[in-house]
Each structure stands twice: as structure tokens, then as C-alpha cells.
Image 1 (cartoon, helix red, strand yellow):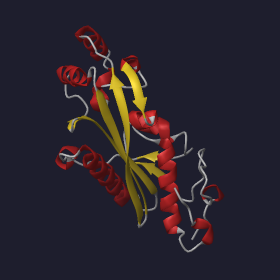
Image 2 (image 1 turned 90 degrees about the horizontal axis):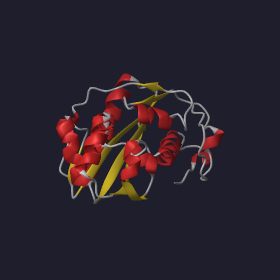
Image 3 (image 1 turned 60 degrees about the horizontal axis):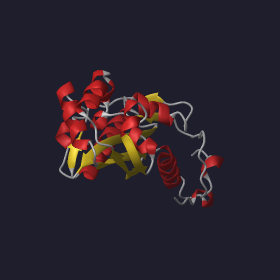
Image 4 (image 1 turned 120 degrees about the horizontal axis):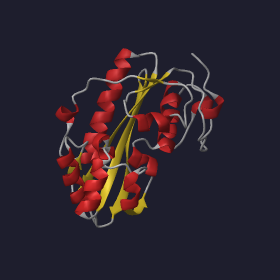
Length: 219
């Protein structure tokens, strides 16, 4: 059994590039998640599952994000049992109405009209799995949009940016101008709460090394 990495052996925050004793796989095709994870882990692979996400969508948006994150992670882990696998799923919702990626420009306009002038929530669930150790947690951010005119919405949708984003917008892109207030992690809205991922990795690794006194890690 490999030794517990020194940068995972304390309870303090160790945000930075991690040196892990296992290959790391990101179970997501999202370029935003790939960019965010690179802040934490230097080298990792991307493997995408063929999970039917529509079939796993349930009424509760938090449960939806958790189920999808877990399903994608487990599916990829069967392909890469040697690796530490990280999966995530993001759901944008308002009054339990869930907004996935727009299916058309009309759908994107509809979503943004619903979010206009209102507070909504963004839930990203993260699942980390390595061998028999697994942990899933959901994290939420509250976002307030200003009142948007149809012209603003149409111009933004015409850029094409909303089309591959949950909720039909990119907070790190053109939609930044729509936001009047935010409570929580911006990385969470983009698709991967990096500080939370780090803590989950530490917990999962500590479970594998639970026989070692140095593996008593808290979050």
C-alpha cells in the first residue's frame, strides 16, 4: 500500500496542486470542469460515461445532481478501477424547476426569461471514488439576476454561449453582467467547487489509509 501523501496528512486547508498516489480521472466532458480541476491536480485524464442523464432526473434538484454525479463517477470507475475518479453534475433551479442545458435557442431564451429579476440556486454535486472508498456531497450557491430585457436575452443567446451551459448562462462569461448578487462559490456555479473537491479527495484517501494515524483527516 502506498504511503499517505504528506500534503494530505493534516486537517488544515491544503489548497494547491496535489500529488496523489493514484492516477486521477475526471468523469466529465466539460471544459470548464477540466480547467477548474487543473488548479488542484496537475495531471489527470478525462473519461466520459454513457449514463442516460434524463433517466436519472428526479423532482428534487439536489437529489438529481447527486444521482448524476454518482452515476457518472461509478460508470467511469468500472472502466478505470485503478484510478481516483472525480465526477460532478450541476443543476440550476428556481422553485424546484430545474434548468439543464438548453435544447434550442428558444429554450435558452425561455430559461433566461424565467431567471430574470429573480434569485435562483445552483447546485453542484461532486462524487469522488477510489477503489471501495467513495463520497458524494452537494454544494449550493445563490445567484440573483437583474431584470433582463428581451433584447439583452436575445443578444446573449445569439452569441451561442448559453447552449452548453446548465441554466443557459455562463457566469464567468457574458452573463456576468446579469448578476447583481451572489452568495457562495463562483466555481460551484461554473461547475466544480475546487476547494470542496480537495476536501473530498482528502476524506476518500484517508478512508483508504484509515489504519494509519496520519490519515485522521477532518473537513
